[in-house]
Structures are given as structure tokens and as C-alpha cells.
Length: 317
Image 1: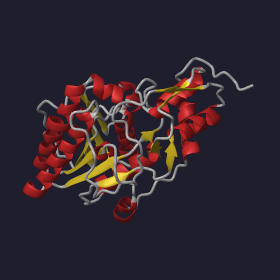
Image 2: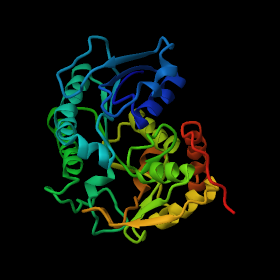
Image 3: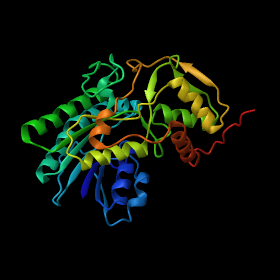
Image 4: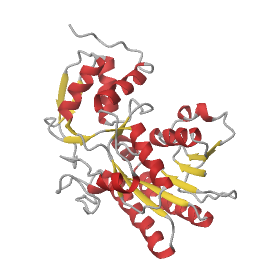
């Protein structure tokens, strides 16, 4: 296939480009680099089946060559990023998604929207199934991301129902792995960076809030399965192995061998208390299930971070 990957130099997008190139597809990677990194795709530049187009997907864009699929991963996805770029985040969920849908429809291509578990907000139903409508604050400090993605789902679904577009929606739960930015504000990258630097691990609240962490290789396998399917979704993609944030902090200390203490800080406004996906739909309709255990994935991620954080870990006594 020839696949257009919107946001292809970012954390998830670059891993998706890797897998598509490795299996023989052609990839057109579009990114404005507001949160992506050209270093994530530098190793692909020599491939005749890879092309990087520096562009903002919220502006009008088109491609004359045929396309078989469009994967929309173009949006700031960590709290510091979407709070730093609030209007850009809303534009990515609205104008960016619509532009991608228009391109896909013009070429008769499959369109896969990378939505998020954030559409469930601070859920009142646990665990979360795809038929849950969510509990989201539309004017809160996270609303630019939550509501941007909810709108993206609405417009993608409307293109499918009204215009017959070949659309699939995935809702991505917490994902981690190599190529996360040390300063992206996500809990795994923050904890690993702090542990390797010998600084205190910052746990917000009392650490009893839960998340479900999926290793990037597993998550991307789900994205590829959705690209290859005719499934409209929405489909949850995530690891249903639920852990408290306090448990995650201790596990990071264990896998890094760090002696960093744990420091507690106030819980951010509208921070979800519990988050865990039901992935039966992904298993039954896509043949997908996560396979990488959390401790193994954290070791792989920490090994990658060690090559980028020069400060040595303070050994445990």
C-alpha cells in the first residue's frame, strides 16, 4: 500500500512508519514538527519507499499520486504539549481531521483516526467499553484535547455515514516506549527520566489513581490491523493490565535500579481517577491483543532513555 501518515515524525507516528516500511509499504510522512522530531525518522530517509513532507495538516493539502490509506496521528498528545498549544490542538482535531478525510475520500483510501481514551474523560463506568459516552468537562484545562478528539470522531463518523467514506476509529490508551520525549510530561517518561537522573519521582495525588500502560510495539500492531481491516470502530487499543501510579513508580525504580525517592504533589485538575480499556472488540474484530508485559516494556524503554540521559543513576545502597 501507499500510506499517508499524518503526524508521522512523532512518537507513535514514527513507529507506525517503521512497521509499514518494514512490511513493504510506501509511506508519505506529513508533519509540522510542533511536537514531532525529525530524528525519529532519520533512519528512513534513505528508503525509496519513504518520503517526508514538512507541512501543517490544518492547512489545505493534497496529493496527486494514489493513496491506499491515511492514518491520522497529527495532534499534540501529552498534557504539557496540548496546554502549550491549545488552539493548534483544537485545529488538529477539527481542520486537520477534515483535511485528512477529504484526501482519503478523494483517493478512495481507508482513513484511520487515532483517537484517545481521553474521550471517556474521568469515567463514571469502569472499565471502559466503546459504547460508553464518557464524562468530559468541555471547558476544563484538558478540554482542547478531549473535545478536539471527540469532534474528530464525530466528523469521521459523519463522513462514513453520510458520504460512505471508509473510516476506522481507534481509541488509544496510555502508550509508552522508545522515542518518547524526556520532557513530554507523560508519567512513564517522567518517572524514567527522574529515576535515571537520580531526582525524586513526582507522584501526583496519593498515587492511587490507575492507568493501563501499553507498549508501543503492541499499540502499533493494533493500528496496522485497523488499517488493513474494514472495521469502522471505535475500537479500544490498550493494555487492560491496570496499575496504580504508585505501583508504576516503584516498578520504574526496580527496573532502573535507581535510589530516587518518591515525592508527592497535588493532583492536576480533571485528572482521571481510573482508566482501563475493555479490548474484547479489538480481539474479536482485529485479532489483536497486547503481548509485552509492563516490566519488560519498561526495561526496553529505560534502556533507550539511558542512551539519551547523560546523568548516571545513583545506585541503591
